[in-house]
Image (cartoon, rainbow, N blue to C red; front, side):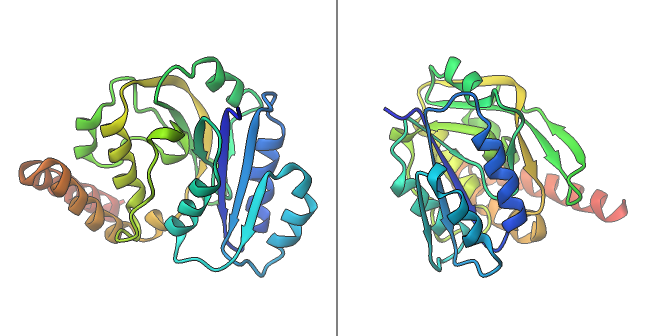
Length: 239
């Protein structure tokens, strides 16, 4: 059985995709499948995919209804024991990442620290959630980086299309509800390239996130989270 299904979603990002492919291809642990979901790129991304198709397990290029629709297509194609989303521009930290995860895969969910890169690909910060993350932790928002999650495929469900920006937050909460065992790896495994939809549209993202918090945790946690976001937005504007 294939151990890892690595799903990469891309749209008109040839240069970013090359970095992502390189970080996957150099992995010492090779029992993985790489699935590319392209949204109908016109910038040369398809030629890059064609050049590497011998090392890509499955790919499709067609219009979609947004990033979460594309991710759902990737889930439908996955056959590995664990699923990881490594979208265009994101990278594994080094060639040992899959080996490290394989050596510790005893849980439904494995998560790790993340290196956050800015748009110039400089290290902006390290995101270290710690080992005490549970379902209740998510009333604060997305406390785990999406790209640093390795999840057993048999507990994975589709992203909900009704959320346009924060569906990954809703998806992760649902995973934590299903998971019987959760494991934390206390080193960064992924370099996350800041600049996704949720980062460009931060206020819309917060609005959806608050809707999900209210639905999952009730009004009291929603009210507290709303104040936290307001303080953060004030601080951000004053910088």
